Image (cartoon, rainbow, N blue to C red; front, side, top):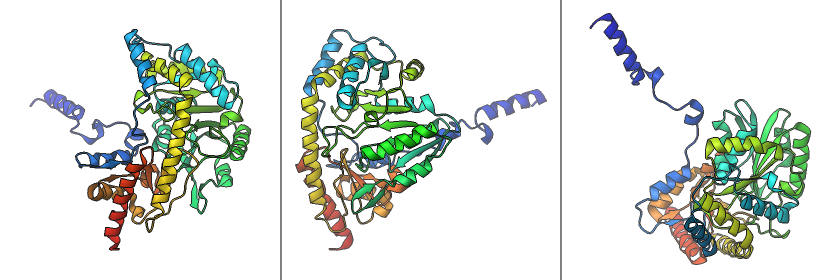
Length: 411
């Protein structure tokens, strides 16, 4: 082989991945992202007959008929074209009215429609955080909120809730100490997935005042705000109750929970008007827009869905109480009724290795729960059970858990 031919061969070898320094890998920030252990457990359940899946955060009920009918009408009328990046005006206007009724005056100019709540979280992070920024998150937490800033090159520090006789609680002083000058963003989810912990209005006021003093952005994931069982009313406390619409607060929401529209991938965020032009650019470069017919169904959900949402919350409260009572009869289970969301996050024998426990539950008991470790190291020792289903189905799951634990203890 000639010298020139050998050089060409070496170059082609490098390009094809023969040399480790040129391997076709994603960038380090992406490779370092943790995979979803919930998905891994669910994958282990594929092909298992009669598995009872309580691992995902969705109801076993389909989207209400009146919303599905609205989407069908929109499709029949030809709503298949691009829309404004920030969403169709009728939906933004409907959402502005909805948020105003719950949290005080909000205009269309502060509302943007997104392709799902998780897309809203990504957009919010892209708006205010970047490489090298310091981000604080309250955990245990749905992993997307912790991992999204890492995709952008930000550094994430966590402050864990604590579990005790009163269930999950926040050490407020510890959180404030973590929110140091120079912190760019706080990501907080209340009501919380997975724990159901719900931030009090006084806690929110203290955190908001602290973040104002230090110029820290608050990205509040309030997707579960309507799934709330406290005495204060039909919605959980919100940073939108306290903050003006043009300060450093971005509230993220979704149609997935309050109207059972998980598969529709439709969300929104409330943000300062000064961000909207730049947000429109980000939407363009992410998704361009949410589907037109889905947005039109969203208008109907917001305008006609209040009675449904109130009925849904009543059903979820009943399911929560039913499951708590049933689990409390199983030896070794420690569970408390949370104030919000649609999950119980509880401890039980073997949950110190929750991922292995949940795979064993699928394999041996045909019971699908989410491992606590999926929500960060702070969640180890617990499992998550989504109770958004019929109580009879919950009873079958409890019976399988009881039998599984008894077989392992010999009792």
